[in-house]
Image 1 (cartoon, helix red, strand yellow):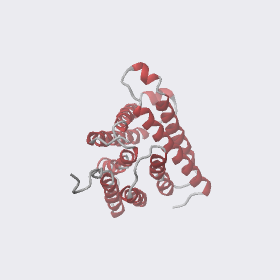
Image 2 (image 1 turned 30 degrees about the vertical axis):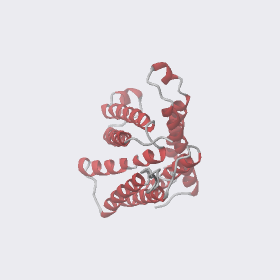
Image 3 (image 1 turned 90 degrees about the horizontal axis):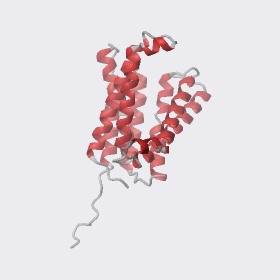
Image 4 (image 1 turned 60 degrees about the vertical axis):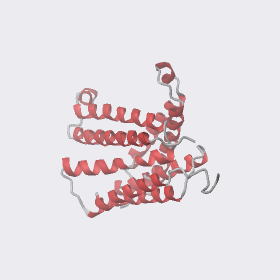
Length: 128
Length: 116
């Protein structure tokens, strides 16, 4: 079993930030959306979003190598937090108590999972 | 929040596909070597990307038959499937903290859906 390196967690967090960025870029590009190849290819937001998404996926794949899947994968849920914050500040969507509770619960959940991955001491107390 | 039962089942299935994709990516990542040829022949990476793609392709049409505010939380069951697969296939240790954490995350996603 791979012991999870702390910087694998940092990499996953970076990946989720990029993923959220990609989603915002898609959303911005959705305004100018048209279903033809030329329009899509020159839709800078969509193109930028795809590149950002590809980079985020690459970083995530590398990060998975250095940790447990059951610890690293749930951290992806923090992406919801970044997207929510971004849409509130950048796209002027409403912020409400439900979003606040949701964010806090995701933070709590990810923290619990991190707590649950601390390795227990292999040598019992008092052993010579 | 409403959705047809087919949409819910469809999203559940898409979530399982997504979890399988994550598992394949983990396999592929474990076997990762940073040279071009090895990357090209890493079958698990291909499988992972394929399953992730299928999962997304399945999810989008389901939105026609159900509201996002319900289907998004159903999609969050992916985290449950990943924990299950990690435990059974990867033999990772899943304690009560991880289980509680997943529950909190899913609740959080439900709240976010309500807030949207």
